[in-house]
Length: 496
Ligand SMILES: Nc1nc2c(c(=O)[nH]1)N[C@H]1C(S)=C(S)[C@@H](COP(=O)(O)O)O[C@H]1N2
Ligand SMILES: [Mo]
Image (cartoon, rainbow, N blue to C red):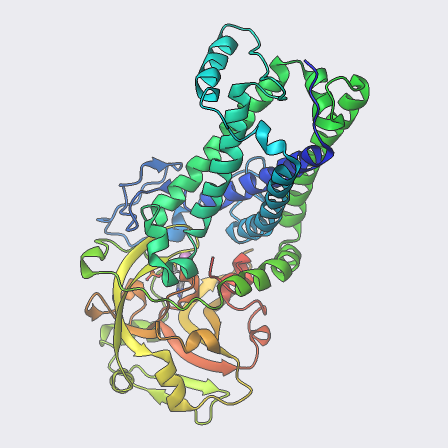
């Protein structure tokens, strides 16, 4: 059987191996941050259909727990970069996706302009029964016949068609359905897949399908005769020189492995540099794709989750504790920095500035979600009251909780987050005082927390102590835009 493949098929096939390996491993890193899969957006503890972790947490638990405890540390052998680096794993994932999509687009364009599509797209019904017969032939340890004028048998043709035209697009579509910016602006889109968690589950099952395909595909290459098939794969003809093909083919595989090992090693060793380098590409891209998507969520109250996970536990600061015991009667929010008049507000004064309620989906970067009704003051009303100076571009919010720094040298630093003014002024950006019609519970940020509905959960600072208007976030903390950006290498524009 002599088969011929054009150069562009050889090149895109190889690029696909490179990008799929990076996406699979970085995707596994993302999964390790919340190794549970649900069909329902409320993520009720125990109702997951798959749990890849021994730890069990319950909604009835008397000890409060933080969702960050649910994170697992997986080996760099399976995850990119490995070892609890969700922030960097997401950077790798989101960096690779556009290159993979680009490769796919080039492939599909060439597929249709070259006429090669006839080898993949089924044009006659008989391909289907023939593919079933082919599988039977394989199971009897024989080779099915190639289709007349085609380099593939019917089973191959259908398998490749399904991967290119069904699996890959579905993987992109379910990926987009998990983005808080997309969910916020087009809630119907994620409903197409049954919600964000169903999209996440389908995205995972898509990965499993890719894995199964790669295993089967590789096994078939071996079954059909490795040197012969490799010659087709790297030199374009199964009749080409087998030794040359073997050297190039094994060299290619070694290069992909070396790249994966090297990127994990570099990322783990130089985490800030990796964050900066990848962020320089990913941040502007993410920003451009999602900047014009204000949240317009309005879930019915029947959708409110029976249980809402918490991430971060209430501050232990004695001043905070005393205020909590006294029902926050002495609490004052100070707003300072680049404001025309620095002011402080009691909770009652804040309420007088305006009020809105919104029932929205909370999307934690780890992967879980939950729905709640939030009531509070539009942040824009507070900004109008203090008067934003011309050189102010960001709103920084300081939390009351100190967190142990990563690396644990004993020093602690306050949780903070920053958002650009453009986000701060959106209608669904509020300083919430209430959750589900009650004053905020301590674990959800009492007495005051940010809600910025088109972003990931970590941007929504709880237990707000003060608000500062700044020209640039680079002067704060480690300069990355917030506590989790500084210490967990998250991106500061958190819309995907
Ligand atoms: N001050 C403070 N705010 C915080 C955090 C924190 O640890 N400290 N965690 C963030 C993260 S990662 C998430 S997902 C949300 C969780 O909000 P919830 O606990 O109300 O569900 O709070 C965010 N705000
Ligand atoms: Mo989170």
